[in-house]
Length: 235
Image 1: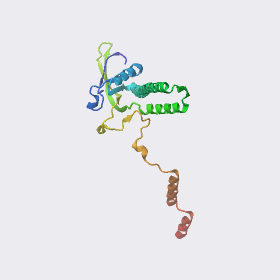
Image 2: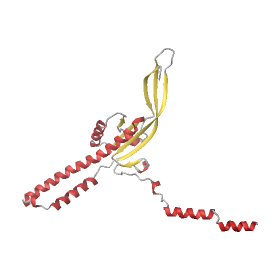
Image 3: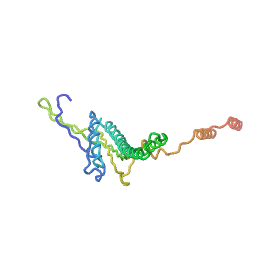
Image 4: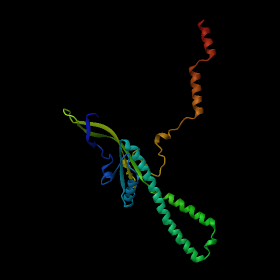
């Protein structure tokens, strides 16, 4: 803006639109467009490890896409981290059992390879089934950005500009939401695809469509014999 310089900026109506019982004493992470994920992910990991139940992420304007990507990275990281923690714990117990068998049988090296393979398969399956579940709730609102511009020259007034800007809020919870708050913007981190009720509408088969079209065409278009008979009656 020529002749003016930006002085101050503030955001209005930018509070999370979730239920008051869910956002009370919950940390809100502001995701910027040019920020890195490292510090944010480490902080969220630390909070979840310290028994924090919910975290809210906020992306304003151009940072909306970055906010969504950051949440997906955190969900995947929590699942992988939980799987690795289970793997380490089960590996320790497995090593203890191997040492016990070695002390008892004295010939562990002759143990059948198929037995070890079955144990590994069971071990991997159990680790995948015990992934941590994170419940996601997203909401989009329109907030107001107020900017103040001071004039450079004399005889000009200070300007106040109000613009609408989109904001996204994403809440990650380790506990499921109550049934009273259920809505279509919620999903579970373990579900790769969210199936909407509208997607279950049965579709007609291609053959049925062709038969219906042929029937309607036969009814709407008279045959050649019918046209000749009508012409003979008129004459």
